[in-house]
Amino acid sequence: MGKQKDSRWFPTQIQLSDPKSLERSFRQLLEQHYALVDRHEALSKQVPAATGIQPGHGPSDTMVCGLFVQPVDSQTLADGTKLTYEKKSGSFVFK
Image (tube, rainbow, N blue to C red):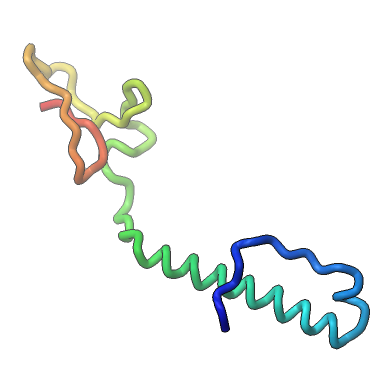
């Protein structure tokens, strides 16, 4: 099968007029559906599997200006503490 166009298709009354036309239209619909399913599965394989909630992205974690910040004990913060971005966790950490 060739690559389907990325467009939406709606059958016309003529395409649904008799059993043979209906079968052809339904086959086209299923081909588009399965092409979309295949594309979704291929994209899903490219995304690494998440192992639970990462630190800095949970419901009790802090956000500053819309950016995730890992929780920190405010009693341990000292002057000169820097807020740095950790690429691995995708959040900011006080160091």
